[in-house]
Length: 479
Ligand SMILES: Nc1ncnc2c1ncn2[C@@H]1O[C@H](COP(=O)(O)OP(=O)(O)OP(=O)(O)O)[C@@H](O)[C@H]1O
Ligand SMILES: [Mg+2]
Image (cartoon, rainbow, N blue to C red; front, side):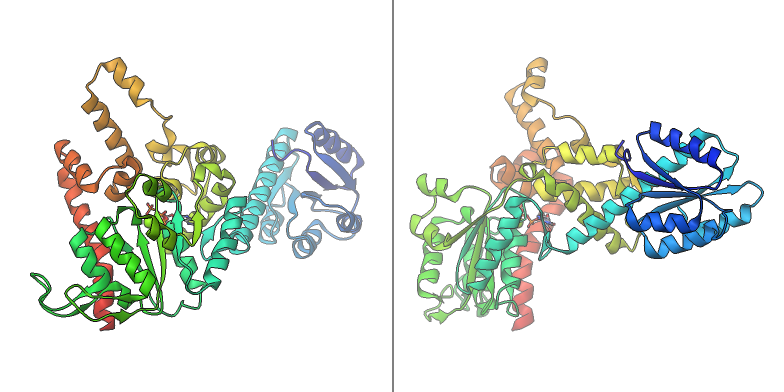
């Protein structure tokens, strides 16, 4: 349908054929012009915006193939279909080599030509769409790999630039899971003059409290059991750079006090140490909960909140900026294709419709997972709705209603809900716990009850290792 109203130029020296084609395509709501030869065709192309040229191969003067060659050079966006006598297959082959979109042998059925034309127009508009998307993803809709054309995202780019320009300003990023908080924190760092010093991310909820303190501030030998040597903390490791404290809302009251002191005095003291070590870092923190609420509820210190929240950055949910979905999908398709050294594939329009309407509770991360899932499951160049994860294609089930039909216990409702969110998050426990608003250990206990433990345990350890390991690896590297 979207190919209606496109302008077609027919180059044909037989007037009866011209009339036939004109009335056929006009009926299909295309605008049609006809000319008798190649020279006139060129004159028309110079004046009008055609989507498609259908040309006979045998013309008086310039041949159809010469016209085709000229169009490829001067009007690369115009699709060309060649009409040739069935006896001259070799010229059809020649035409395809020269870049014709398709060819049709004479005599032909009008319907057959109609299908050839619609296919050519469809391919042309897809090519144009991909080209536009590519330009957008490379250009103003891409800021440090953050993709977005929607108004809130364009405003976000401005905010990031302003924060980046102020070397010491703290920023607090608030956004639901998967909205790109870490991406934004990195963008602030890499667009600031601290970019050559380290960016050190720390997930406050992934590390037990006592360990977190020594991770952040370091420790002296003998400060506690297992402290066999002096060790610098991540704040020191980040000297000159940026520390990213993720899930800051989970910081314990005692660490809140210590962090406040670091921000006020710009020094750290190692666990068990007596010396004040000056540090020059920017602190970027993130939370998936409204920290102001936590302050009101007395769980988060107000003075620390003010220190962290010098510049607030709010990340919108994906469902509130659906116009960014096609750009993001294109971006991820390109990214995965590049990563696997494959030619990029694309989504069929009904699959794209699913992507545009899904609620995306896991935001951009969930979208990225869905694209990767489809690339793995889909076998063709075009990805279909059934290639998407079931959690995306299935209509949202109403768990409460379902449960009341089955007369199940509250615990069973909880079990179904937890497992559903876990599936949505691709088995990622930290994310699942954060959406459910429960502690990770509580989630783990539940999963063990549900006999989910075997699979989860390996991932669990991996995650914790990763979050702690990051700092350790850096510390080793720079000592
Ligand atoms: N605007 C965006 N453009 C491109 N990629 C994005 C965008 N937002 C998020 N992503 C991608 O989505 C994934 C999740 O982003 P990120 O880890 O920054 O989210 P987050 O808000 O920190 O999530 P969480 O709260 O779960 O930690 C990453 O792979 C990231 O690259
Ligand atoms: Mg994050």
